[in-house]
Image (cartoon, rainbow, N blue to C red; front, side, top):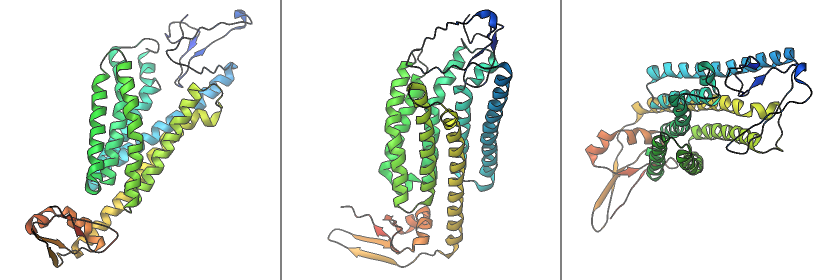
Amino acid sequence: MIIGTQTATLEIKTLNRGFALRVYPSFGDEIYLRVTSARPLRLPLTLWQEDSFWMAEMAANGRLNLQYGILFALLFFNLFLIFSIRENSYLFYVLTIATQTSFLFLDSKHLRYLLDEMHSTSWWVDMLEREIYPLLVITALLFQRSLLRIWENNLKLDRLLKIILLCFGLVVMLALVPNEKVFQYPFIFFLILSIPLAFYNNLDAIRRGNATAVVHMAAMGVFLVGTIIMMLQQLWPAFPNNAFTASAYNVSLIVQALLLSLSLSFRYNQIKQEKEDAPNCRPLPILCAANKSRTICWPTLPTNCARHFMASTDWRKQHSLNFAVTTRTSVSLPKISN
């Protein structure tokens, strides 16, 4: 009997990343299992009384329903906000949460559960389970880029981020190759590069006084800790296996989604403040400085109006200005180039 094929009457269908099998006293005192895996695998086994098993199964399914419920609530709530606020960050947040929900659905084998294909599966299901990994990273990086407005504050970081996104786009194409190792190794390599880059993006934004980046940094940290605990639990035999470590990843996924939603509220408050400041912002006197080859002019900008003028491209073209904004002084300085 092969567990997972759902062809044996002894096997019980379960939603919780495992397999359940009825064991009767007539089987005797010794039961042998053969487990094969392409990588080192930790395989916890639990012998349940049938009543206890069904109680534990109901509790686990209840937690799973709560997790899906929270993710879908955040998804549809922020989808509604897209049309009312019209801010791109909300769109990328919805894409990020939708991808994370899809990742939970596919990685937990819930699609296979619905299709009764736990052991062998269709080609398209296998492709979906591969493609979701790079898409998860792509949507997360796009959301961070939109939330922190990286292209406005640090062009070098933005170019580097675009290169990483193109690399993950290549991984999406490689996932179509039948041999899964063709896409696994590049995915792991680019993931190792993207994690420190994502943290540095937050640090750079925090240095510029962006409070939104603090919340986003916390969300990333929580999710990373949960992922590391899940990997250690699966790969390290001596790692503790208890209720906390078993649910660490699922909890971190929910906390991360909530913190990312909180970061959007910081972003919304920032946009609201900019709109309130905009009517009070007027073109101020233009200062000019001459050197041997050219005369450079720039506007004096109050700090609370700096972003408003940066966004006002028509005003900049009218005065032929090229200036950089700093939030630490009340005057912006020009970019001087020879």
